[in-house]
Image (cartoon, rainbow, N blue to C red; front, side, top):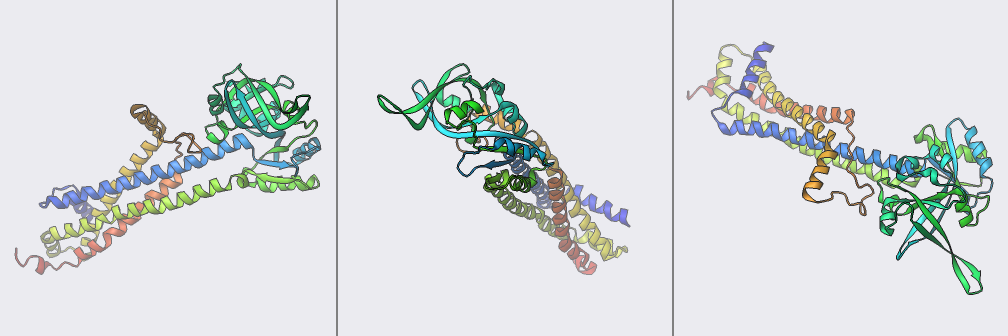
Length: 414
């Protein structure tokens, strides 16, 4: 009986109905489910990609956790690094100096944040060395006064590797001519691109000792940056290190510094999932109208099956099978469509931008100028499972109506 019911249900799906409108509604139901499932997979994958890229790029520039002095003046930083490295949860530590200033080249100028780093130590706590596209981070040598600029900052100044730029600070120096701002010439030795306008446009790197001389912080630093084994426990690790060092310092980690970014992404993902799931539900419940019309169209077939011995449960299974096939075909088609587009999304976007001369994500507006996508099997399984459940639920009422059909009533006028 199971084979008999499935065979008839499958035959109803594939056969051309006398009422072409019913066949059209069936095709629309499949197409609607496929589009809804595909769009949901693509959108969630893009949100996942944004979250991944944001996390990786923020960590590449800022590390996992920071320890700073209250007055931006940490003198016992070497001892603090030794204490941090003694913690088994800390993989590396590096000092840094940070400050603000004005960067000038020719007739162009721009405000910037300057970070003094030790290239060897910094490469173990962040990924700055991996995003340098021209030159090298190793060119930052003490006393050479070299500087590595973000690509957007270099473009704003129209500066290239080998050019000499001038850093001017708000702090003044007394001269016979009066109070003049302190300035120093640096040679551009590298250009980096992290893909986030906030960093590419504002941040420049110099050597730690050069920054100490520039800001008159000989022997002192602004803070110590840590790389930890478990980034999701960074807050606990940096707190333990600070307590072991005797306290009196300020601590922060990547989740606190950028908590609003990740919170907004999670909220957006949840809202998008609910909204697009409603689209899937609407598409799935088109099966209800399809099966209601099929039941009406197949009244005589149902009556004949009942008169030759088919039970109401068999009629129920026939129409459940028909609706389930529509749901399964639509879901599988949407899954294939969503996965294929997601895996090739960056290429598709690049082709469209080149063809139409448009930019989907302007670098000066959005934090990330690329359109990343990360396909997660858990999301695909969840979306597919919910779509199939909704499609199956949509078959119950029309199938029950078909099973309740009275053979005598159906054949009265035949």
